[in-house]
Length: 227
Ligand code: DC
Image 1: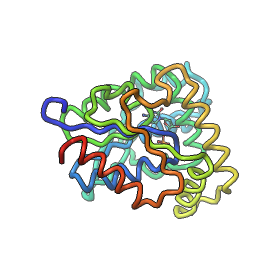
Image 2: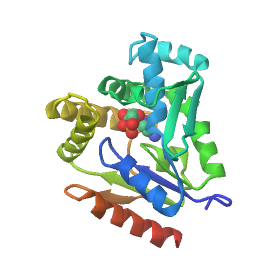
Image 3: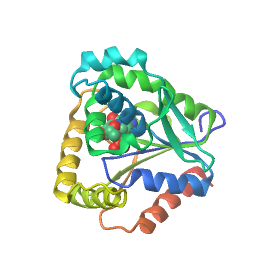
């Protein structure tokens, strides 16, 4: 426990079910759910809107001082992202912004820019924070660290169905390619690469139903935090 607050770090590759499971577990335990990927997506969107190439580190870095990024919760407790006062929560969920987010997240100035915002949230609230480097960099003293994973095909199918539900017409093959691109990018970057913290509980959700994975996560939380 960090002072008076509990923090739970849930890391893992794209499409492992982190956000759905974290949100549901946060509801069950009355914690605040923080989706940190949305922060990187918001910077990716800003770069895209400014016509900056996703790999142009100097261009993206020069843009940062102009960005006012706010993470807020609506009346239903759902996280919303604001970029310079505009609600961009839906705009950040497209395939092109997934690629932008992955590319800009490899840039050290971008990671530095977002670090305090993430740490400050965990100082004041009980949080379940999901991302790639929460257990390794953002909250190395988290009360519980979980690394969620599944095969790329399983993750691509989940992401494909989720995108379809939102009316996105991307094919399964495109989504699988995107997942493979991001896996490679997110794991091979020099700064805060995707990897399990040494003290993380590793959970492979391949083939699990949502309920099976949720039960597993909740039982680990109860046991570790004595809740
Ligand atoms: O979780 P997501 O797919 O919305 O994240 C989008 C991208 O942001 C992902 O490709 C990697 C990056 N990311 C990161 O580097 N560190 C985090 N804590 C969260 C996301």
